[in-house]
Amino acid sequence: MSRVSDIIEVFIKELLEEADDCAIEIQRNELANYFNCAPSQINYVLTTRFSLDKGYLIESRRGGGGHIKIIKMDMDQNRYIQHLLNEIGDSISKMKAASIINTLQERKFISEREGLILRVAISDRSLNTPINIKNRVRANLLKSILIAIFQDGGK
Amino acid sequence: MSRVSDIIEVFIKELLEEADDCAIEIQRNELANYFNCAPSQINYVLTTRFSLDKGYLIESRRGGGGHIKIIKMDMDQNRYIQHLLNEIGDSISKMKAASIINTLQERKFISEREGLILRVAISDRSLNTPINIKNRVRANLLKSILIAIFQDGGK
DNA sequence: TAAAATTAAAGTCAAGGAAAGTCAAATAGA
DNA sequence: TCTATTTGACTTTCCTTGACTTTAATTTTA
Image (cartoon, rainbow over all chains, first blue to last red; front, side, top):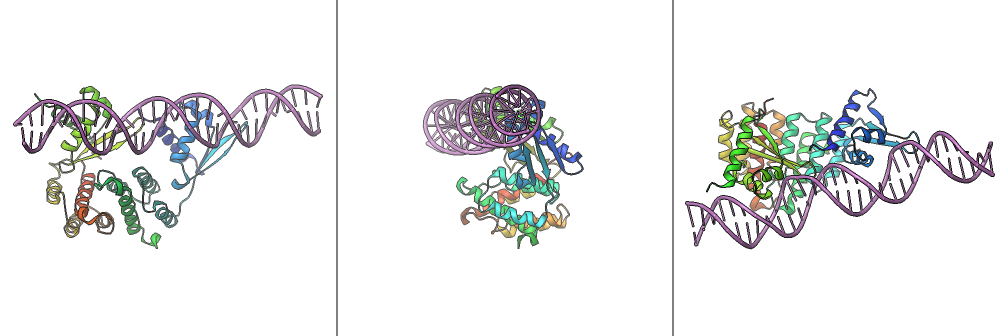
């Protein structure tokens, strides 16, 4: 029962890999048809997996001959880290933290093993704190680590 | 009579034996169904039989197509790490943790940057928990990371 | 030819479904 | 008894679906 959304995500990322300008254009209905899902699921994938936060830009056009354009942006490391520190704030969910770590890894800001370490570190099971402070501890931990690794981004 | 929890434990361990990367993914409901028990009993088995101290890491995801992933560290091949897990116990001071991390780094088990991440992670400042549970959280976190790094992932 | 109607997209949002998590009460075993 | 196990009600998280809306291009009509 592997999730269709994940499969679509991977598919889109592969398309982006192949594209030489880091941008692709799709048709929502066509893609939905291909994966046998509701068209709106494409929107779901886009908003959950290809958000601005993760370094993607979405443009689209409705009506006849409409399309969706997905652009993988170049990310400046320091600025991105700075942005993340703000974004994390003083509380963050596990999913959101994991997604940040994945992005850092995908963008080669951290190695695979470092990604592994971070993902484990921010997991609910590692942080055996009372549930009501878990997200706060997680935010603090993640920010500390980011600052340590990317010192100049954190000034 | 023989307890269902024990049977489930053995079953999972067999699955892990067969898996070539010492990690398996299960579906909680499916397994519960198979053993005719309440789904939450699976959680019970996981927390009592597959704890960090015993060298297991658990990851999971909710929602449609959710799953539970069980990762085993190869205790035989990582005698030293196993020893460390025991030494850490369920509570450890910052100084002691730092000393462990230094040793790991000296012995080239982890890179300089990984050492940095670990030291930051277990620092008092990162772990903004109530002081009375700080050493416990630190122990848990450090053990999780060690198992993650030294899991027997065949890669 | 310009407005109107039709058609062909994409967008939004809320409801429903499919998992896993939590916690505490009931029960069984030592 | 006392601890370990079992059960189940309730919660949380994530995914999927579908009805309805909005926008743009194309075709029809006056």
